[in-house]
Length: 609
Image (cartoon, rainbow, N blue to C red; front, side, top):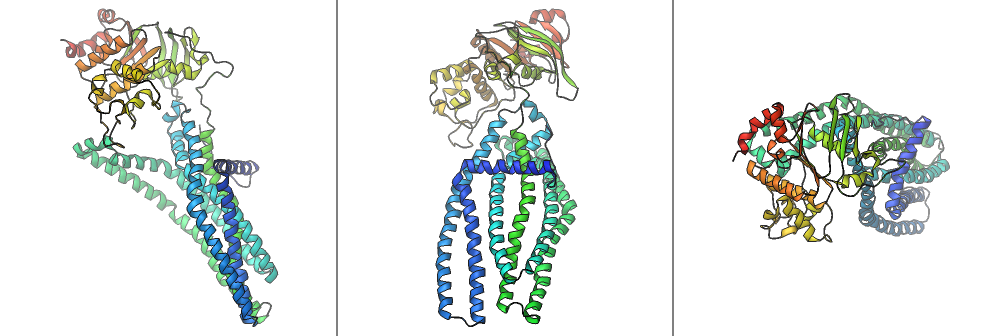
């Protein structure tokens, strides 16, 4: 999952990649809005052509008219013509800036971000566990808007450079071809130092990215509603977070300081040496000598050539900057493309993908082991069989491997060794979306969304969904009594973040609402990962009983380290350090008189009526 971090403009492979990357982002811009792409080109040509005509041709004509005493009437006519041209150009420019730009740029940005968000849904869960990949993922998303702006700038650079070079190049050749040499030398030095500066800036950006992600996390903590109460009740935690925020800022400052001197000298060389020194000192001396000593050009030509030198230099620089700028843009687009081109490891069988059988099925784990790719196994040789309509409980202390096993059962991870079978068929043979739809799940770390109640249950736009189905799922989860107290019913917004009439649910209420998703789904199997962790003993018993009754015709897997959940289970599996160390019914495990009984003895007092 490593992403490329360095390219060379002078290598064939590197050049091909740079062209390919920039073609991708330009294609995205034109696909989103051809009008916008064309308008950028037209505006770049128009703007620079008008400037050339006004500031060079017109000024040159006026100065020569004064120096050589030409007709005053002709000068007035020319100025009047350029004033009219300038008025029309201003109208076009204003339309471009305040209409085309505002209207069409967001379309291109939206198209690219839509691709990124669509891809994000396909990523393997393991990508989020990989810090390096996650950093690149965050960078890709954060660069999406700027990538479109870079594409715009690249178009402007190309067509501005061509327009300026053709116009001013022709003018300089007609006046004094030697002047072009000074400008070319200035441009070559500019290219060299700017390229070095661009690479340094990119290196700093990559080094700064993980630090910025940390800083953004600490920043979010201080303004998000979720943390407000705890931070006010725990001043020491607030101080520590603030200290961490300052520490990350200091680290970013140290990074920029460590690179600052090199950046300063490169910037000075790229700008002062190539512009102020060569064009403002050396070139001016040359013009003065050839006009006053050798009388090769007129005084008016000296003024116009000097004033126009920067424009020709800018045109040549723009053309020469295309390569370094395309390189820099390519480096960022590499991150975006590496993300978009990532091939999920968990996907449908390429040769065949069979449909899920109807009704409850038998699920088996055969010698299943799992690690995160570092060789340290989280699960070791798991063997278990879950029959249709069975109630299974996975119990054990935190970190025993229960949730990891569930993620394997749901095909969010793939086993490192062994296999998982549904009705005797390896789950990798089934269509992945159908297989996951077969399972309804409520995770311990569930999330509610800032939308209304019904859409939090359906997990989709719910305008055309029969309300009875939603309400039925809500009552099965035990959230019905809360729903009855809400004036707006299913339309009630969850949280008050975007709606002042919304409701903030307690931990237990939120857990019941999340659980209603599993019942709405009408899945053949329910997985409930610590479904009652936010509830007290009595509420926990009531929720578990309601879920058992509501799921009478389903296979149910409970995950818990609170053993009140397990008493009604048909079979209990006790996990410890990634292994199944005991299995049986509640009574069988008590008679076994081992680890399960010890755990029960510790917890039982809470559940004795």
